[in-house]
Amino acid sequence: MSPNIKAIELMKPRNPRRRSIGSALPTSIEERWFGEWQLPRDLSPALRSWLLEPGLLTDRILNAAGCKPTLRVLSLHWGVLSAAQCARLHVEGARCFVREIELVTQAKRWVFAQTLVPESEGILHTWLAALGSRSLGEALESAQSVTRGPLEFCYLSPSHPLVVRALEGQAPNRRSLWARRRWIALIGQRLLVQEVFLPDHE
Image (cartoon, rainbow, N blue to C red; front, side, top):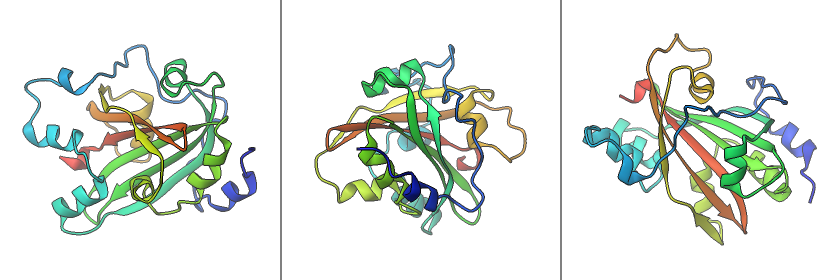
């Protein structure tokens, strides 16, 4: 099924961040994603707890901040998967639909999240674009036939493209940031979710 481009266009934020359609999505020769057993032993218990959070991050932020976070849709656009991302999603074609959001409260920007859907999984493009301000996690709670891959983690350098995107428009960042990702299969079709824990989080 071909993606419903008109529906996607209608769901775009009024001032979405503009992206280069032809450029590959965040990846780097220095990027190394690893499993829970490889997390540093000296990682603070608080940060470890956030990285390993099994439930909805919206609920976790609600408990930490005392108020429900706002989900801001930053961008809906087409991008290009890296070779590593294609391998993780078990696809050959590199083009994908991208949704970028952030979870914020009045005082903090907590999490930046990026969802990548391969072009071949056309039925998911419109569904993802139509979520609006609803979180992916909340939408998946009511979905059937959902399979989740294992969480992977990475300590991203300040210059990593995913960090740069997460902090676009903010003060210059000179700190590395922790991120996690996992693939999710919905009706047998895989998408990739990448979440960056922002400086305000600490």
